[in-house]
Image 1 (spheres, rainbow, N blue to C red):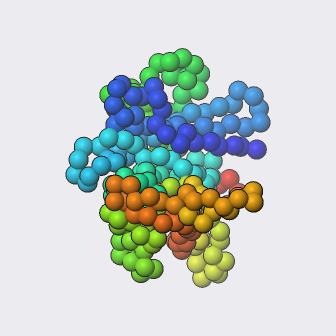
Image 2: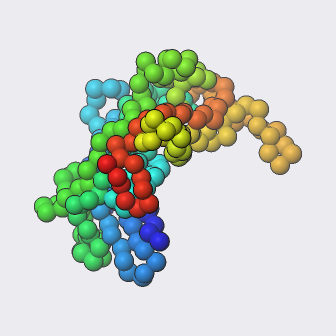
Length: 243
């Protein structure tokens, strides 16, 4: 059995005093055999948590992954803005990425993995390190598509139909369409942090509704599931991928 894990945030050792310089994340896979570990790197998109057009000040979080094969994955990557954040800043990056680790640098057993030697300084990977390849499969910040279902990207203030901050869950299910065998339903869900004014837990009511901080909106931050129908570039067949 092969297992995979993904570091959700940039590796701390990559930073040198500025969050924007922490721009890579690691994937690891291992089998049941002890010591069989592979670590690869991926250069990640800088995001800005303030106004659009400003210099990048953070990296996107990697909130979920789905293995399509031994080397290809779907990765849910997002910034921290949207309904529920409470800062009034617009979302700038929420995407599902297709990631391929084939050909990326294996750091297992090297000083980068065995010691504190940094894999990057000032945002630049060390010489000789090859990152994984990635391509954007779904841009969840498409206002036209969101608008078809009454949703929006408003944050000053946000509304109950504003895309939430924490899109953190992802799953796929086959479309079961014989005319489109590579089609799947992609489901993306959010963590609403129990932000509701009408909560009830262990027999007690609670109010954790949004407080309109910085003009970002008040009320409940509802749970949400986005459903996309899409065609995967290749069809999973066991651990292999068939064109």
